[in-house]
Length: 87
Image (cartoon, rainbow, N blue to C red; front, side):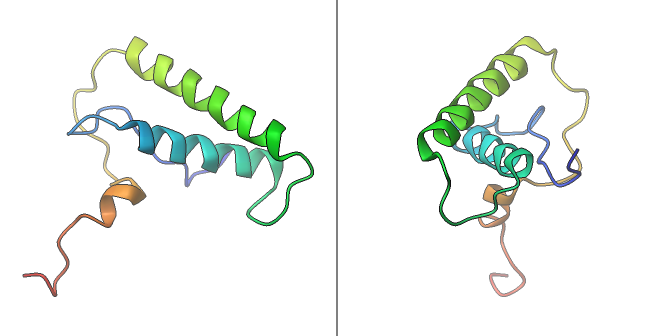
């Protein structure tokens, strides 16, 4: 569906609740064709994001460990990476 949805399984350190919620929000926005702005039903959208986050957490717990970590860094973790200016 969306090649930009972040891979969370196998991250080191393990995925956080914030990262799971961000991925759920990204997925719900894509499915609902909503990027920002007013929603017709904020309650329904928020409930859907929470349900997607819960399902994602259950899925990640149920899967066996990955043999190697994902090749991409989740957006929330990119901010924490040192930049060339930091070095």
